[in-house]
Image (cartoon, rainbow, N blue to C red; front, side):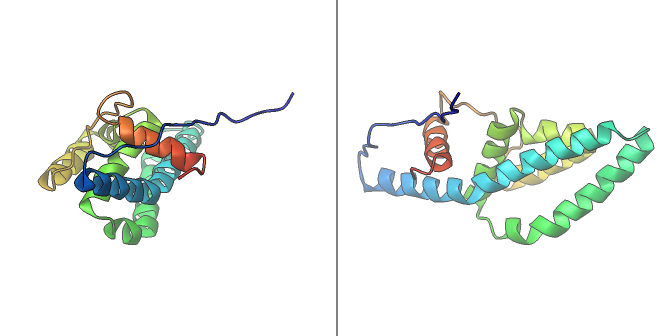
Length: 155
């Protein structure tokens, strides 16, 4: 049996004006820049969750989470600091897409509600909500299309 990948074909994008076209290509740029990090974050969460399941008690899990948080911040903070606000918002949406949970829920599950509320407050100060939900058939339809095209290498 041959495993064939699903290949999506979409009709060409039609724009009403130059402003709409410019916004579309800015979104493409943002998705291309942030999608790999969303996938990486998903992989880190899965790996961390699986490893935490093997730890004997809550204290060991807490210590591991503190180490992981420090390592992740140390490794990715310089890259993420260079993201624009729109790219940060896109990353939040794409994390939700990859993990099927909001960033807020993920932080709450791993780091607790106090830290989740802190990061939600911090994000809100810049106009970004960690509680943003993913609507691939609704308002995020264009982003979903772009993600599919990027993932299959068509864009």
